[in-house]
Image (cartoon, rainbow, N blue to C red; front, side, top):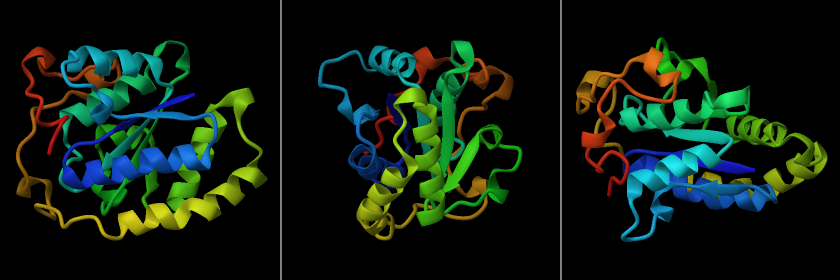
Length: 201
């Protein structure tokens, strides 16, 4: 099974990098991909589209700074609405609450807080999405408890956000249409989108 981790911004990126390695420690047989895996010289957008098509589950690492990112919406929507109903998406909430995502496109998907209980629910969800390849829950829980402190240690020391509070405090994102997201697209012209939202330093 292949998991695609979506991120935007430095805090989201750091959490995503750790989550990528951590999930593969906890769940044998799960491959995790995120955009820093793109090699220099590769056609980045073509690679992203290819990985979206090959992935079964999207984890969108959301923070107060990035939850309006059109890239996050595009990637989550592309996987969740893949043909055959075989795609899954979950918003991983880092210093942001479910209430803050009311009427947000990703509120239609699963959401999990970036704490021990929420992360356990995320892990169980990914495991169930594996179908016949899923791990026995007792073994999964044992692995989760063994590795949880590693992930928690990173989550506790993420850098301070560039801004907090109301979404208007942050940079404006292009308008995104939910009807378009459901089809795996966003209501903007992706061919002219800069790389910065996806490859933020």
